[in-house]
Image (cartoon, rainbow, N blue to C red; front, top):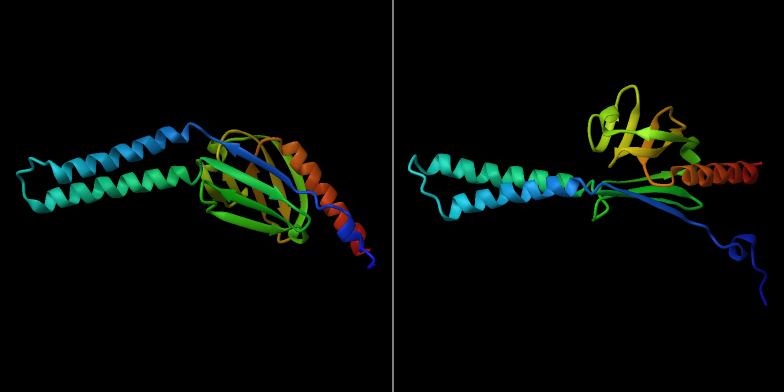
Length: 179
């Protein structure tokens, strides 16, 4: 019989959280409408000004529709996972953009009661010189991480107080094992 180490006997606890913004589905529908307009112009056009203006209109409508559609669907929701080694943030349905921050790079975590898209210049993955970086998918509570390089990273997530508690516990545990 072999001896089990402490890591093998203690189950790894993983905290997960997410935030969703259902209003962005309306923007995604707007993107679909632009694409439909471009397709309609290409298929059934009574354009008499020539081929070049028609092609520019079709390409412009489809490009704008795709940009709006994929830009909004990427930030309909955010998923946050904290395990024993790192914090991972995934956006949208395919998980992009994604960011993984090792706990060794996190100096502290704070609960932020109110994070708004207005503070950050809109929804999405944002950077502001005085504020740092953020993933903002909706208005509400969030987690602000202070990183070892002096930067901050803010995430809107439901039950942010629990996330902060878990991160702080992990940081204390890592500091205790380093001694």
